Length: 191
View (tube, one colour):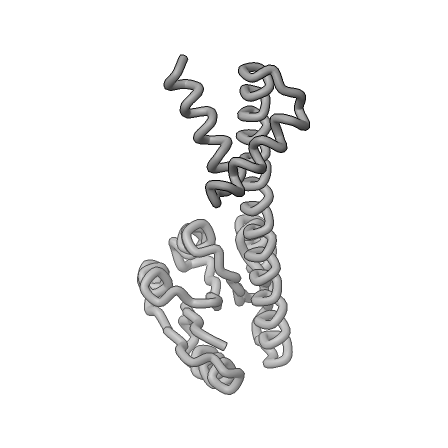
């Protein structure tokens, strides 16, 4: 798979999780000694996932988790005592992929890893689609504006202005958006 960062204070749980993750194909497993170290390790290693043990007495875990999510957007699995699950859910609902209760069973952890990573991949794909759609909308706006300027300036119909822009873009081997931006620029300069 890839890299994982962990902040687990329980040495027995840490050793068990390392073995489980190693056995599941994680090439690099980084165990951090504090929430601050976890954040620094994550920034440096760019992991695919973070696994964190929550303790109510451990100050700064919630802030670190939020910073991790804001900065890297990686799936975060939180492991907590049953008595702490409600508190973790209250502050972590928007940033955590999964919350697991101790003791962690291997099948639960593996299911959480697989589902969290799949959800992260879907999220990345959606972000890319949104960016593509935004770019498309922006291009359309610029093209429409340039087409309007041609119609006004050269007294063309909408279809004639569009065909002229298509022909000019093809002749110059540039995109319609590049042509539209050039038309708008020359129109501003000439005004």
